[in-house]
Image 1: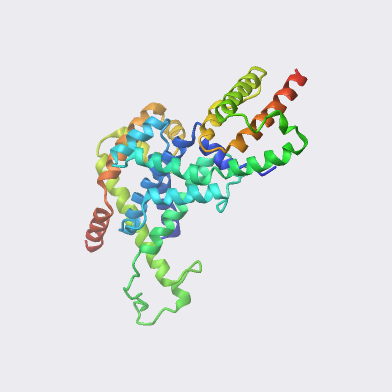
Image 2: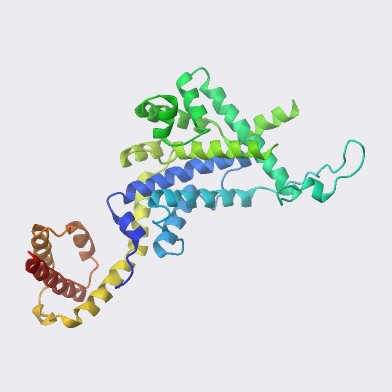
Length: 209
Length: 141
């Protein structure tokens, strides 16, 4: 008897279409967020939907595995794959940084490669990490600006330092979970207004001031 | 820029992605949210169904092979080759209903979805298979 194709059973089941749409939604959001930290959009050959398409095909074919013993929820497992693939796509499109690393110390001596590198990363990788983090904090500042004086939204924003799950946000903030979902929609509208280009522009201005 | 700050930023943005992407409770909420972002959900779902038709039916072929192997011990003459396709389909429906009445968790809809593409030989072997399963259920009751 052939082994049952568990992902096929789940995806052909009553929840299949919801799972697929949830993956497309998640891929779309992660593409926006990765765009903030890279200053880029996905290359035209790729789209959130094409990423999800590839993952679903590979999971059905068995070339990407799902171990229900490790992660019983197929959607959670596939979101991890989406997050990984989109992250890799953005890493590939990031242009090489051509700024020279400043190897000179204030006293005029030169730093060695070992001095510059930490955690096994090359100087270029460290620079990219720093750039990504600056852009990430700029995006977060922009979100806070858009939130303004909305105290409930601010509570949700702060809770995001701990979790992204609405039920857990509700516990942390004391807001009813239905209210969290409503505020989530407001955060979605804010996220749509923050383009990668805007993040880069603001980060540059901050860097110059 | 410390590693801690990098981790803080990464953790925040992952959580934001988790909250904004796909925590909707229902398919209808997801459709609304995706359409607001300009994503054609009808096209997306159509694409999904194509993926399933192309890549999930492997089970149907394998199940058909497994059924044929299992039926070596069964009397396939119970289903004459001259039985018409429509009779075979009707018989499957009757067998599935009978099995459900005996408590078997049968997805009637799943069988009917596959009829469009099943061969007559598949249908005959399915009838023989279901007949054997029904007899087995009756013996257990």
